[in-house]
Length: 160
Image 1 (cartoon, rainbow, N blue to C red):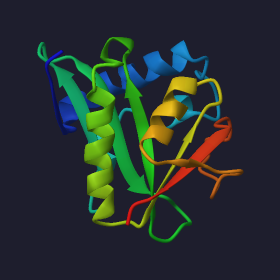
Image 2: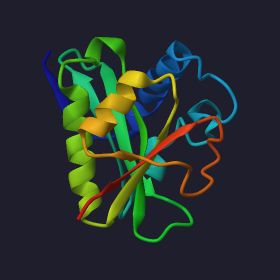
Image 3: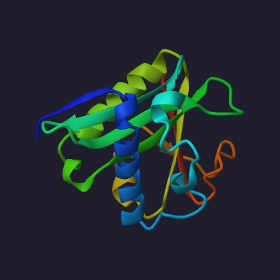
Image 4: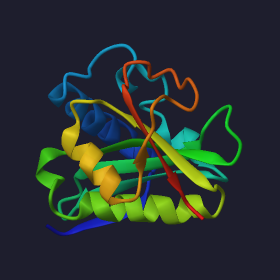
């Protein structure tokens, strides 16, 4: 599969929202306490445009958005960012797209932060293996309250 990874643009907002909602439905996470009810879901080009906060999309050879990942400041925690809204459509899984997305995101994060935090769901087993493969260590409890109270698994990674 041929694809490019680039920073999100306004025209991508609806498409990445659809990717995320499709994945959330797939894993039964289309409910309160997950990204499903995030008020910023359709506004990524607006909210991921400050220093220390970016969002990348993966686009296939036909111009279809097939995945994305964001880095944002973790509120209430000094020098820690959060890997946010990392989702890939089923057809993109196993192609290396996710590996390249996380690699770009973590390289960017290293410029601003010393650690990277993330939250996911217990039933997203492949995602957990993926994060562990990329050096994330599972935590006993969340670092802070992010509003995603349904996310029952959290990880941290040292960036330095």
